[in-house]
Image 1 (cartoon, helix red, strand yellow):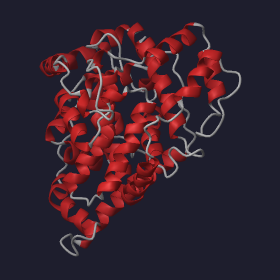
Image 2 (cartoon, rainbow, N blue to C red):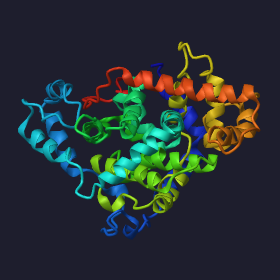
Image 3 (tube, one colour):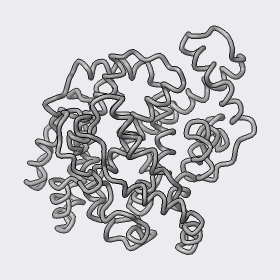
Length: 407
């Protein structure tokens, strides 16, 4: 990865100082989302900005300090599907943790998970684009997430980091997500362990400490911010695009992500009960904290090179920039220094709605044939790339160091 010099970061930080200060101020707003709006309908109401994952955190910190993580990662590489037994040879305390961490919550509704499968089957093309692109680009204007990614091990290999994040979205949408031959329970638990390692390691980085506005990264609030950048953002965009949504399948899609939040270590009291309460939570923890950072601008620049050296004719930097502006808005695109594309930006603004209507059978005309083909091919190419990346072996491993470029 091309280095960003500290001098460059400081210069950019000065120009973004006002926006950064505003983000810090907003993040300090007291937590007001009510436990009554959560999946169980009750809770302590504790501010999740100061709640972490003590069981996983303490365990992983001990394993890192004892130098056991490389051996643990080697053993866990072969553990990929939900029905596999916990591998032999792990430290006893980790084995005991995994035995209960991989279990689904007792409130899991398998009928709703079946409804989620139908949702994913019908909307898989849109999901591929929104998971792999809209949510990915949004992460670059989530200040805490951008800093955590940039200064942790993930920042040293963004292609690997992005593919591992995409794997979670892909596994949620797979037909056998929580079945014995599926992978989501294992993927979520490995991600939970990785989060615990980052919480232990990042506070040791002077570069992260100098830019962070929290004592430790990846609080329960931070996890829910990222959660909203995935299913809540997907649902908001599908509604904005006028995609017809079956109520039972939409509720099933939400339930699959409720279960996933639990598997990531989120307390029940922070998991929204409905799409309406999810949107209320997103209005507090996601919408107002979006802001540019030097780290996020650099990450966005990497993401816009997604199609570089790939034989996919439509996935150019200009097209991906235009999609960013169209999906996330002018302000986000301007923050990320993405210029307005003279052809694709107006085309998306005027023709995307009719294209979706034709694609969904709501209109039989209204989009020129050439435009319809370009949009449909764009969706197809992105999903092909997204799926091809996920066919490669992706191993989620527990990090043992921060980004070495900043140590």
